[in-house]
Length: 262
Image (tube, rainbow, N blue to C red; front, side):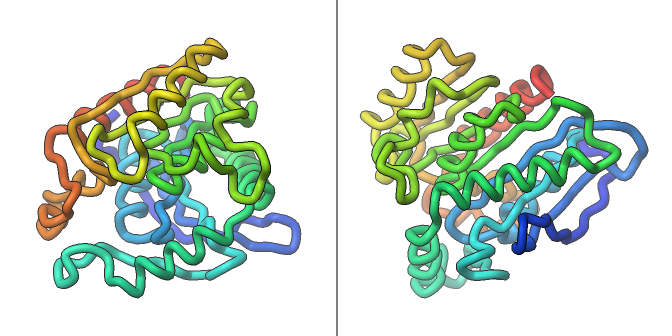
């Protein structure tokens, strides 16, 4: 299943009195498919997250990226730019500011609302929902993995898993025993935001609780997957963490994860 025709649209996910903006990409052909929730970095559902959502749909999945800042900053998104050779200082500060206001119970609520939304789509297979996330979204994906509906999770360089859980007293790593499905985690050994000690602690907990998992480490920095779309967006080659070896290898493992579990 590679590069099939897809259709994309912006949708709203109902969650009590909240409507969560989301980007939905799905196969254009009829049929039933596994579904994947795509969790953003601190920069919102930006062009990179939309590209990833479309790429997953092209492999034969219904993919959806909910806006995790809906309560705090509806519509916020920031993009890596060639001019700034990164994210503008203003965008970076805003992303951090919003990230620091997110609450665990709201994250759980929004994930569950997204799962409920997927379940009512006629082209989503029963019991075949997975998740993928990057940085902030890598942590959110780890949280999502603790829900029984999530069968497969790809968590990329999730920050703060060992030390925090968005306002809760218990860090997310202490919920590792609740993971029901399969989880793959991806780290860069030169990551200055997620230490080697952190990812080793995560691996130890996954082993301790006999969670079905794999841990992948690359000679790369934080955000190494961001250069994956350099063919479409050549300026991404300027990304400080761009790694042309790590990203494609990680992507093959993501495909393996979803093909075997969704």
